[in-house]
Image (tube, rainbow, N blue to C red; front, side, top):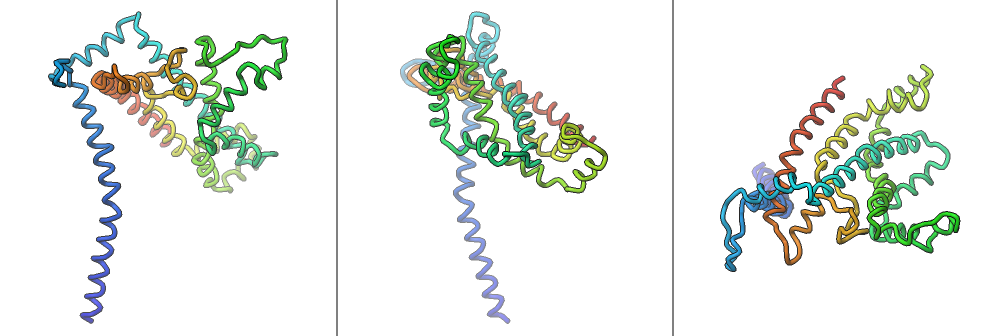
Length: 303
């Protein structure tokens, strides 16, 4: 009896040691890459460099004053960066998400060629984004398939990417196709978990495809849809298209707030303090929006 207790005790100790060892790496990663870095970035927002050659700084609110001046300065390009950010966010939230839901619904209904459609939509997710963007640029550039299809009757620019008139529209067009498959797994899993008797009851009542999607599918998968909507709104001021793949220097009107913050943390003229202050300001601006969306999604789910 005592030997059995000793064996169980040793087994429990071994299990506890194994659990601790397995948790050490993720805990350290969380503490360093999330807690420390985020806390340090908040402190950095209040540090004002002295430029005395010694790397010193003082504590102040000058970084936040600079951010406010950028909001009030109409000549600054900051507003165009904010506009692009909201455009990227709107395109992903109000175009990509509904399109993903609709296409996933047709695949769920097993329409003709649904498996082929699934592969086509999944391709940008499976393949490396760099390869997909290069193929896309080859298709639309001068001498590519798009020009061959349009022929000589339609005058196309030599490049859609290095032209401020077309660059942002080109990236948005690319983002629509490349971003459709990102939510397929969650939408598909939620739809497949719906009780088939609910769908059958709708058919008996003469519900058509559109009515079925709006009145049955969406309410049944609302916890998933509402969560994805909430996650999308958390990035309302950090939304950014694939600018690094198409316009790495941001010279053609595709710069966003998050990309601008990235440029402020790299290179010889970097200003990490200003970047941290900007990020903190937009975090505070985004918090009320997130809480409102969270409240609305809970109300809708309850109804």
